[in-house]
Structures are given as structure tokens and as C-alpha cells.
Image (cartoon, rainbow, N blue to C red; front, side, top):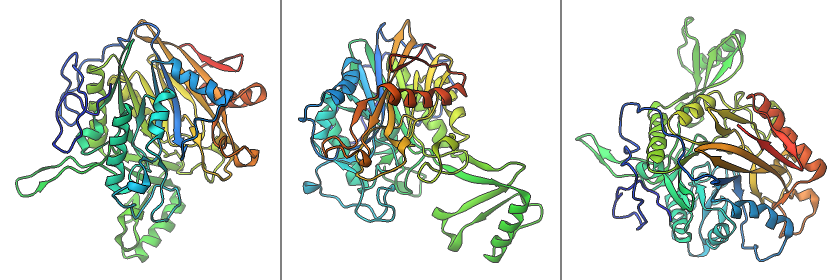
Length: 464
């Protein structure tokens, strides 16, 4: 059973959904409340297992009737778990009867193209549920590639298939609210968000100020930020000169300058004088606090809470499209956010977006995944080899705590492997040298967080 809300009716336009009977009525996600006492530990029964994967970039047509022992072995991990998670990277509906229109902007499927964006057929939802994916995030840079209508159609089809979802909604309240999954070992709450998205993607809360009444707007639970590039004093002087040529006054005492040709806010870039280079991100406070309140609400209404974020941001501003993934590291705002998420009640934190694997941190006994790679990668063209290495993690609980994390390495079919159409981009277990390569990458990156991963029989094991 699922719910996109937390026990309160939204509006007449919200499709009828099951509403959980909460153990304790949670605070509304948008309500301004004082920070509560530390959250209770997970209360799932011993043996509860959560299986998690990365981005669903495909499949774009039904193909699960094709028998394949390798692919079946990957999804047996999800089927054996109490709940399974992946990020729905795009929309899910049948384009031939879609009543809406594609957006004028998209999240990068074909940069600059109009009318493009990844879409999974409606029937794929049933396939995913059968394969063990019981909950998905709907907040990412492709969520509104097909406009508000595309997002709403996606949510409706997920509901029909019985897949819980979070991160997208018909209003800001609904987008931030948890989705719930009932299992034999306890109730799971999923809270979703994205820090990487297109300008039209954030959901609106509606309301008014006595002068203007605003209707809610469908969209995602966005974590907005202002990226600021840190530059050397010499670089700053050059940038200040460019700003002055654009007619923007810059005082000698200024340590920051913003270049925005023709006042185009959506392409502006700010620079700050610094003794070190890189990128820093100033988060929108209401977005950050709203997400943390949603996590607290989800934990109060469930036995275990999972927080998911779609985040492409890095500490240098570079992306894996152009830079060797080994040289990229998570943005500076992520670790403080994740620690606060755990302190607000998250038992597991999941990051997706970068199409490569990143490290795992254990904070207060709770796992934080900084990059889960992809679960499907059906794009039909060649990218960096690291994009085709990934992992499925099975997280087991005992006595209200994570007792073991098993990392199952997988490889996705790159175009150069000449797999058949039915197998390109599909996950298969990695063995031998492939397993050593995949797990070795996670092992090395996780060591930076003090996390020890033991490799046994092609499986990585973490015991917090």
C-alpha cells in the first residue's frame, strides 16, 4: 500500500490514495516548528532489508519477457528485500495518448532540444513492481521535461501500479510529503528531493498574502542553491573588470561579483575572492528546513525513514561528462545536509544523479550513499567506462539499527560491448576482475569517510 501524503487530504484534484494510520500525527512538512528531541531508532522487525539502486535511465520499452539469468540474479536482490528503491529518471506514461505537451526546456537528455526527455511506457511500472522496485523518487532534473502534465501523469501511473513515490507532487506540500510502503517487517517512509533541476521544476505551495491568492503548483521538492565560484585575487580582478564593462559597479572593497548578461538570472554566475579555489553553494533556507521537517514527519509515521536526493553538484563545479570522475567530489553542502537529515530521523540517505559510483559514509550508524550510479542505462551511445559500473546495496536491520550492508557489483552494457538490443544498458552481476574493479572504486572512495568495506566472494560488506 502507498500514500503520497501523511494522513491529510490535499485537494479535490489529488487522486484517491490509501492514507496510513500514523503512530503519532506528524508535523506538517511546511509547518514551522521548534526542533524536536532526537528521533527514535528504527522500529522495523529484525531482518528487515532495503534494496537500493541508482538511476532508472530506461528501459524505454517493455522487454522483461526476455529470459536472462544474469539480469534475474540482480532483481532477485530486490525481490528478496522487504522494499526496493530506485530513482525514476524521467517520466512514465504512454506518449500516444498523452494530453499534455513537452516542455520548452529539458534536463539534459538532448541539451537545448524541445520536445525531448526520457519517458518510460506506462506498463513498465507494473514490470518494476514485479521485479521488486516498490518505491521511487520522482524529483530530478528530468521530472518536468514534459511539463506539469507529464509529472502528474507519472504520479497517477505509479499510484495505479502500487509503487510508492516521493519528491514530486501536485503542490509543494505533496512533493515534500513522504510516500509509504507497508511490509511484513514494518512501514517505510520515503522522502524525496532534488538540488539539480530545471528552473520551472520547483513545486509551489499556494496560499496568499491578503492581496493575491496563489494556487498550488505541481512540481518537485526542490533544494534551491546559489552556486558561487571561489577564485584567486588575480582572477577576481579580471572578473570585476568584465562586470564593470557590463555596467555593474564594483567597489574595491567588494569580495563578490556576479556576471549576468542582459540580467539573465538563469545563466548568472557569481564569483568570490578566496584563498582557495572551488565552488560553494548557498542553500535556500526554507527549502532546507522544509525537507528536514518532512523527514521528521516521515519518521514519526513509519518504522524506518529513507531520504533521497538527486544532486549533480560537485565541489569544483565540474561534471562527469567532461572530467575524470576520480577527480570529482560531492558539493560542500551535501555532508552537512545529510548529517542533519540523519539527526532529523533518516535511517538511510541515498544520493543519485552522478552516473558514477561514489563513497559511503556511516554517520551515527546510518549509511549515507554519495552516489549510487545507475540501475538501467539504456541510452544507446558510448560514455566513459565508469558510467557502466554500478552497484545494488542490500541494507539489513537488527535491533533497530543497520547490522550489515551488502554491496552487489553490477555492470551495464555499454554500446561498445555489442550486446543485443534487449540487453544494452541492462544490469548484470559483476564477477572476478569486474567485481574487483567496481567494489575497489567504492572501497577507495568510502575510505575517505572512514568506512571499511570487506570484499568476500564478489560482494562488498559493511558492518557499521
